[in-house]
Length: 572
Image 1: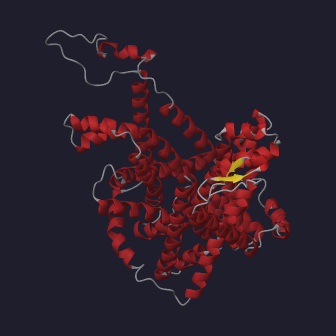
Image 2: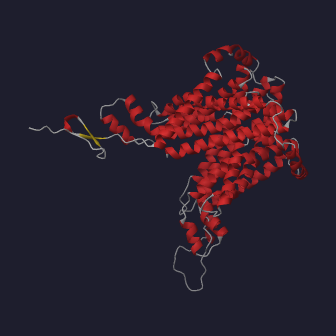
Image 3: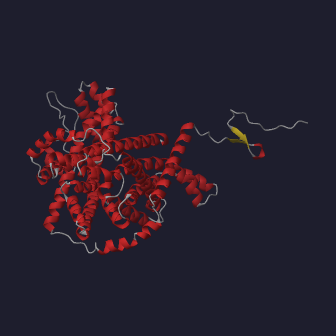
């Protein structure tokens, strides 16, 4: 009598199980997945090493307790200037931010069309446009502001140019990606009707791109408002310059009082941006006229599609409620831009003379020079990378409870989720430079303060990503695991976390890229890194050293961005 032995051929895709049943083999992990896992582990190890090297621990916070108490005693109660002076600061800051956002939009839209595959057939032009967009994101805003302060002088204009060009990096990339993903149908229909290239763009692409333009522009306004503070430390007018002047004289009551005003302004801007976004993009029904449409009733076309010979058909869209609302918003935007131009007090003479001096100023920055401190510059660049890594890791860890409690399908109740959502919005609204100033006072000058500031700033981003990812998971996977007898903790790790992990990994690399750029700017307030040496070199007119530092920063940011893009591509 022979005994049959269950065997599995290499290509069968099954393995013997209990009772002689064949079970499917575990899917093989491909090389790219292994490489991605290895890369993420290396980044995690480097982040842990950075946390240890920068002494980010409880002991550091305990050692700074006395400084914290002293800082609070010299901060509270806040002192504020008169309402008129506060209004002037706020108005000038909002004018700078609004004009910078408009400048970024004006530059980004045509650049995005040149960078998109479906609107630009020349590969060389597309590559050049993409490179320009990436470089705009890599160069720190305060360096651009420092350059234009020297070229055009103090005032609002350097800040408008710096923030505007800085916005091009983010806005141009998002617009280019959105253009490549639009529905080609409307454009092809216009082309078939004989429309030219410009007519195809205006009639077939821009209407589809409008939601992305509105959302991205409002997001850029929020970012520019928070980023405008740091420009005040290099001579750009606005509330940031008054904060800088108060802190330089150790008038913490006034400095932090103005910081509180700025925080309230950022929170209001966040809320107003959300309302504007909802009003401009909320409705999609254009068939039903509003109560205001009766004003334009005489101009509406006849409801009948049957027309007698010789009658003319209206080709322009009717004045529906949505069109009236859109026109109203457009008029309001134009008025806001005009008011901002008046509030910013920009003179044509300053602009023309500044542009004439730009070439002469640029010549001061070449050739690059180390100033005899080349090794120190490399060491501080490494310190900047450590700040970015440590800030990302600590921020991710701190954001986990906020993200879990903000997700409606994980939080104990809707009120808890709403409360933590509000906390996340508040944290995101705090300008990073203000957090950095607090940690510099508490822990002292150096990279530790900068890394802690970056970690707090990252909480808002990570918490929102975690909450949104948890709310978008496939509940069928959770139900299947739960049906097999798994508990809540097992369901979370086996079903929920496995679905969230890929998106979280991609967003983590994106935040690392963001933190590396932000770490450079924190050097303005003495929070360590190569930004501190860039600021000092600019103050003592060592512009060649500034160029060398800028080259190191741009190279590092480009590498981190390439790593972030590769990670995002692999997890999709």
